[in-house]
Length: 79
Image (cartoon, rainbow, N blue to C red; front, side, top):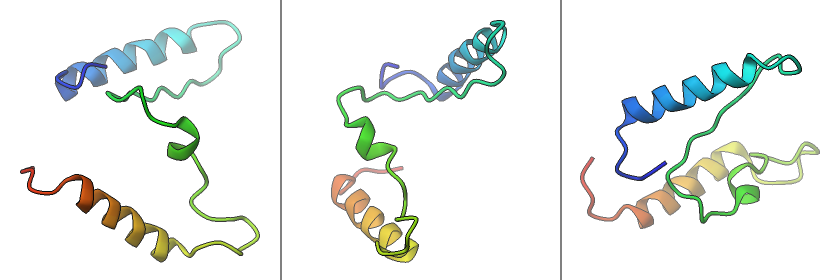
């Protein structure tokens, strides 16, 4: 979606797409992800939060890292 698209419009478009997909004979359930940024690494965005064997970072460490990254990317912008 265009970054300037209002949330309501993005939601309505994605919901309409989900309903159309679920209307197909072979589709029981569809999950639609809407994003304004199509130049990012999908593998980075949809990677597991932690290793299943427990050898990776804790959830607390991961959240702290994500917040730090968010703060660096969002310096000075108002909500």
